[in-house]
Image (cartoon, rainbow, N blue to C red):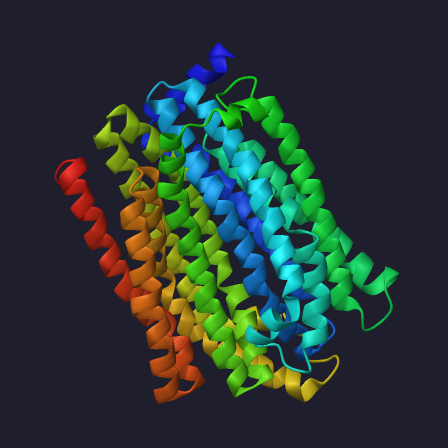
Length: 465
């Protein structure tokens, strides 16, 4: 036990920054990529049907699935960041209480979310842009994946954050990756073998829910084992002993992180509503792009999640020069990846979007129109990738140091002041092309504001930057 704790402290405090960041980030990137495949595999296999209306239905439900991520961030990133800071400050008992409280609070929150979605499912789907042609598909998917499956999904993500922030990045990645690999196997089985033709969306939902359940079971097992060597706990008594000061500290980071993801989800809802007002095919095309562009996002979020515990530990221990070196190294790595992905998408947009919708099955004319919209949108929206990473890395850095107020302010300004208003304005001026262009313009404005916020904080708390 003692040796393992020493190893984690050495990794966070003494290992050369590039090596430490790679050690934490590579497993996280791998899990993010597999989790990305996990989330995209449903759309990929549904796309084999050539049915644009099924694709539009998965686009409608994507925002509900992403809300699972927002809710898991509340106690996953909030609790994980606080655990890392408590470890850096040499307070293991408090860290254990934070871990236990996060697990039980995430479980309760997931149950409440499932019940609320179940009670108001149809009105929510209509609000999100479901039409008469897509609502039945969307309903069948949401009932299984959200109403029945939110608990294992939210709990899995929360446990992964807690494990990652105590140095168990590999185990967190293994748990999430396991679900992704299993989903790739179960999707075609349920969609094309076990269920009749026309039930492909239901088959995809069943496969996803079962994969989430297996992933959650593994992560619970890994979390229990981790409690033997790092300051984490699953005991109800530790959760009850969580004092108000630590709850406030957890929420000061968790709430902004959840709101950040929730506002991102709100922006996607607005995109869906505006796109659906043009046509179901524009909505389906935008949905394809939202999946393709998540490739660089997954890599960059993996870098940021790997960075977070190292920054949090060194901030709490007072090693601000190392803290800032980690931030700079992560930022440079993410920008390089973002520019490479942007160039690839510009040259190979048609090939990238065609992966998600067959133009030789089903209604060929609607499929070709949908792919045409998607390629156009991708070439425009991929320009946002570098500035989007600046927003991610700055937000995660502020979360790591407990700057919840700055994280929250950045989230509101980025989405509510820049991106969403630009979405409506540019769509009104230039139609669906303007809707796509709102992302790079809005993210660029948000990135400028984020850098100003972070540098202001660093001058005050971390020395000149």
